Length: 91
Image 1 (spheres, rainbow, N blue to C red):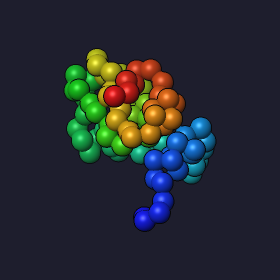
Image 2: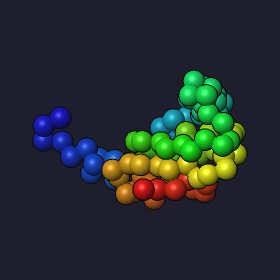
Image 3: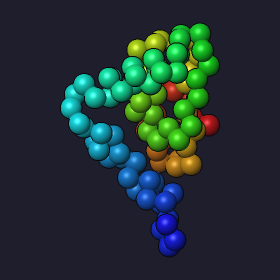
Image 4: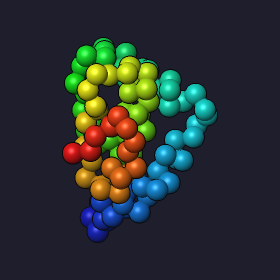
């Protein structure tokens, strides 16, 4: 990726990033439940989403699991993290 500004790319894409996941209305809930199932996540777990982007999947996992602790979201793009909603926490 020589000559490409990856961070700048995602900074510019953040506001519309979630729209690119519109495979159908059930895709994000379905994929999020598969993620939680594969990782055997439960409400008492402390969860970190590394490379979380806007938190699209972490937010759905949180909605489904109702975790006792906020999900920590890590991403190099401040603009992506700026799209997070509760109960997600950027770091």
